[in-house]
Length: 428
Image 1 (cartoon, one colour):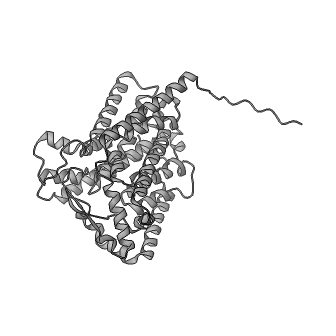
Image 2: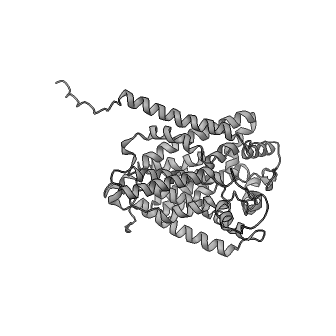
Image 3: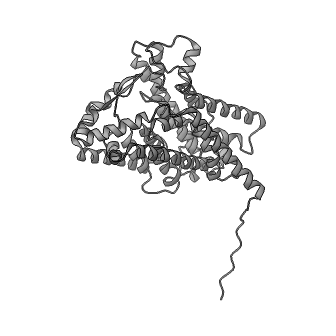
């Protein structure tokens, strides 16, 4: 008996005019980004990448890794501050020409931005009107590359976007599929740079115990491995270098867009009150992680991730603009809500206004076009306070004010299961 005929798939072929329009739109945004970078230039000349590269070459020659320093015209001597495991991961670059390393890092950052944007677009639950996330990523990635967090990442030669990809491997792929190794990306990212550890707290808050255990186990295993390979270097990092914030830079420097940076700029040259910083940081963690968990329970994993990433940047003692990638998912959340079919006219207009405001702040930034805070001096006027803390203030507004939608608003009662999130049994 011949096999039963399969029903033809409903494949929608875009009209030629639509294809031309889409290609033209991508070419336009890409051209805008390329022209902007040509005009802006590489103002940092891969400064941070030079620290990685030169420190690893210094280490390969037999010198103590954490003794390496590089002079900075604003903040004095800056040091290699990543973990010993990060040094092992990056060690091969010490044997390549610097030009090749710079090309590799830049290419990987652009590629990682595109992949991360596509994954994040796919996580938007209530918007986009059915558009392909890969097309949306091709359209908006050039515009996202223009904002200060990514401008700084590229021109400094940072590795942030590669860590973001490790985090998103778990949230965009492993967790929704119930993979047994979900959490390993977060764990490895935490072992490289401690900042991603905030996402382990998010896993715990959303009661995804197996993934949290895997993340902690991966971070611990990578750290132990580094300790076995380089015991003296590991001891030096965990007992000394980690706790010396002056190795990273000045707390009051405008580029430090954390809560501690804000408090430090208010009282410089005096040191900020550590109890005041600790209380404010704990408040942000409590409110932010609670709201992130509520978003996850409602099926809005993207909002949960966004809030968690912003909380991490706010409570870290030093947070440079290139650390605040999570402003970009916030833009996608807001655009998704503005384009949702059931969004009313007034809320849509307010949401689009918020999108424009967040993008404008992220583009202008705090160190690209304004006073970088070269002098150690306090912030003594409201306009100066706002300009020197733009990213902090926007991050706080997003953490505290973006509405967390209920299950019915993001795709029904099964939305949380579709996102691989276990309900927290709390009202959204």
